[in-house]
Image (cartoon, rainbow, N blue to C red; front, top):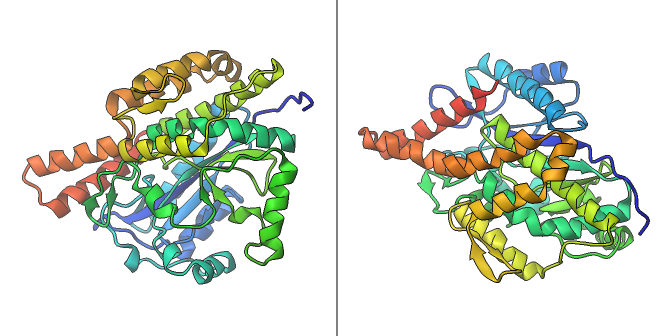
Amino acid sequence: MAQDNPEFTIGIEEEYLLVDRDSLALAEAPPDLMEACAAELEGQVAPEFLKCQIEIGTKVCANVAEAREDLRRLRSCVSKHAAMYNLAPIAASCHPFSDWRDQHHTDKDRYNDLSSDLAGVVQRMLICGMHVHVGVDAPDRRIDLMNQLSYFLPHLLALSCSSPYWQGRDTGLDSYRLTVFDNLPRTGLPPHMDSFGEFERAVQILVDLGVIEDSSKIWWDLRPSSRFPTLESRICDVQPRLEHTLMLAALTQALTRMLWRLATKNQRWRLYDRFLVDENRWRAQRYGVREGLIDFGRQEIVSTADLIEEMIDLLEEDALFFESVTEIEAARDVMRTGTSSTRQRAAYETARASGASHDTGLQAVVTYLIEEFHADL
């Protein structure tokens, strides 16, 4: 494969839930709210599948420093306009207590088709994620990097967990979102592929059969984007704290460049069977950063703290290249304070220890999520 020189630009997409500031339950976005945000953000905001959701996307950014300013502007705009309707956005992958049965999907052709095609499975999609696009122009390079980067997806998921609650109960999982999302077809870790042509041929079979319209209906944890010359990571829960979003974006960008650097030296990251990487995906989904992941080279379970330190060392050159040392080292903040799932549980336990009921404790979690969303704006 010829040695290309990717730009490694990044773009970040986030999905938010809208809650009523009084009841703290989910609320539908009124049309005027979407129109006001769209008028100010010029194509960087869109409705999501459910009317209680809203999606934003940054511009193409060279690094996380650029992304920070754009993301802060996007979050601030959504918050400002939501407040006019007594609403507030939260960036958590599941709402702690609202019921999916009470939600309504957006009346839009794409979402109407999804509702028709996927029936009861998609009706439960009361979940939010974050996606990170990394610019890699050469299609075959995109596939080569997808194969290698898949190894690190559980590490990114572990750092991102923000969905411990579902329908008013603690699920015991740190990322319940994936449990819901994996009910959809064409999800999970990407399969190993040898070329972009192989990817296109596989997609075309489904298109020709009328199963899907295009590759945008391929919802793997990592995929070649259907719209941009990018590799799109979709594994992460959305982050309440802006700085943690930037940390995950910086890690994704740096990991992609690190793997490309190996290729320039005729080296590559060892490819492990999807079955084994999937075990780490489950461990990350279940425990977040609490119980460690399997190091297949050592053939032992290693603490997440140790793995993150190794990753920071591994990415030193790339962090310096992108001037994202501070953002990448913010992964240590997650190791100190826990993921959002850990912090949400702490907010609940604090409320309960003060005499709050179970329901009031869950409301305290939502209040905490609102505070975290606005802390960096």
